[in-house]
Image (cartoon, rainbow, N blue to C red; front, side):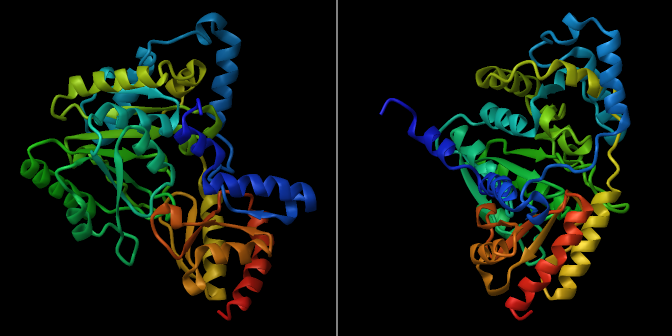
Amino acid sequence: MSYNQKMYGLGSRRSIIREIFEYSKTRGLEIGADKVFDFSLGNPSVPAPKEVNETIERLLRTEDSVLLHGYTSAQGDLRVRTAIAENINRRFGQSLTPNHIYMTCGAAASLSICLRALFEESGEECIVFAPFFTEYRVFVENAGGTLVASLPDSDLQIDLADFEEKISACTKAVILNSPNNPSGVVYPADKIAAVAEILTKKSKEYGHDIYLIADEPYRELVYGELDVPYLMNYYPNTLVCYSYSKSLSLPGERIGYIAVNPAMNDAANIYLAVCGAGRSLGYVCAPSLMQQVILHCLDAKVNIEAYRENRDLLYNSLTAYGYDCVKPDGAFYLFVKVPAGDAYAFYERAKAHEILVVPCDDFGVTGYVRIAYCVDKKRVENSLPAFAALAKEYSL
């Protein structure tokens, strides 16, 4: 055959999340969308802050349209990169310049670029903390690496002993996602400090740098006064991958950035490798209009109260029905331990009640499903009798 079989495999079988989402659309046409309780896709349900739409309207009305829709510098508009660097410096006590920022088409592009920039030889490994976003495996393998999963403790926090055991001479990078997709867990400062200490020790032991990649699309989506540690402040060899998909409810606009820690060993050359990886992948010049929107909306935030209400309603109801749930501190996902332990069997039985949840075997753990509660509150309310009926089937 004349085409790439690996790419055919990725194209012919979507991720489990997308498969369920596509089924939901088909099923909705058959019985009515309001009768399908789809909790599959992490698609924000709260609107973008008013500043975003106002900025778009103002830019379209007042700016030169040729410049507004034209190419920026390959790594992003200088004013935008300068503003983002200054914002990070102010919030987290860093010292970034615009030449530590690379604008990207969202977090997926950021991760793909970072991995391509770092991985040199086949056999190099990237450790991820389970449960992990399913597409990490695709991104790592496409960069020529091998994914290694570090299993969590019973609270779905980082198991430091397991993590240290998984590091080898082949370890090139570690991806850490907090707040976590799919669990909603936030890793606290003491865990982050311990991860940094282990990485420093192992880098010395093996005689090469091990890089920490912070995947941060959910940083702003936390409940209460909880602090999400900024990884650059704990470990020098850190790259931050950020997306405005969730923090500004702009998933379809595909805008984000990579930040290279200026304290990193050989930071200037790592940044150039990021630029080269973006070039090789065709990710130069992130969407120009969206870059300008970000420039004027850096301090805007979505109202996460709707997510909090959905979280509390689902968590309180499902635990009352007898389900074992992990209460999330961030993001907009509820992680549920399935009765009898078979996530796919639970998914099928839930589907018979028109409840669509994601079995989490592909997330690196077994026996859980993910509920994305970034939906209209009415969907949550209408789904509760179906969840109650399903609980009775399992005699919870």
